[in-house]
Image: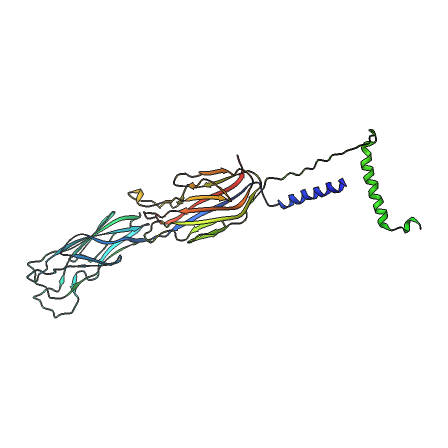
Length: 191
Length: 199
């Protein structure tokens, strides 16, 4: 009777040990956390007007705005002049390049009108772009595009754009019509 | 009828009785008595073991594959850090003895290993490392939160469980949304989860 019972216990112990095969006294796991920040640039706040004289800013989207001169000409039909300062919060989390360019180089008449040497049909202007690492200047009289050398550090801060139209009281009067240009600021990863 | 013609089952029963009597009578050979006893000690050692099954992961914007947790939506459109949560569950984890739980961070944060990932000017204008919290529960047992904003590389949080335990072992890792942009690159850290003897 005892012999039979002892044998049974022995089998139970062996069975118990066999189920522990593969289990260990200590268990551990290594978990690797990863996150990828892709190279990117962007405007974190839409452009905003901080100072203006005879110019107004309207922003349709962070990437598209318009600057309007309410009084383009003075009472004599000559360019009245104006100035606006616009600030944008920009960020690039990698090496970046910044540039500014003008489509037409100056404000030009949107509609085709007969040429008349007694009247001007375009208006020059200047644009200056300042940010933490430098400054770019565009002038209808000299250059219609400018770009900075690639900068090898990320940038995060305010970009300041100043657009100026000088008054020209002694110049020819301007033809009537809508004068336009497109000024583009490009901020992008340099690789 | 001769013996060889008797049924076999009777022969077997007789043999068993003989062995039993022999065992019972043997201790009485030199100490005759009207009583006899014999005791038996039964032993079996239960080794300390832990079983941690394969994990399952849950979380939005997160991919888990063979021990690697990837935050797929790491940044927001303005390049600041996106808040994220991932839960890794080791179902029905079991240890049959009083263990110590520990969580260790190798780097003290998810770090950008690229030596070119530097910031000019104000160092606080960008993130070059991403802090996170890791909390661990095991059934009804919870351990202190590992918060890398308060800890350095190689730091660990530990807890003595208090006894054998079985239950889901759930690790929750969280990153908070940021307010400054993150420098481009791969950010990583290694978390080690151990259950073992208290030291």
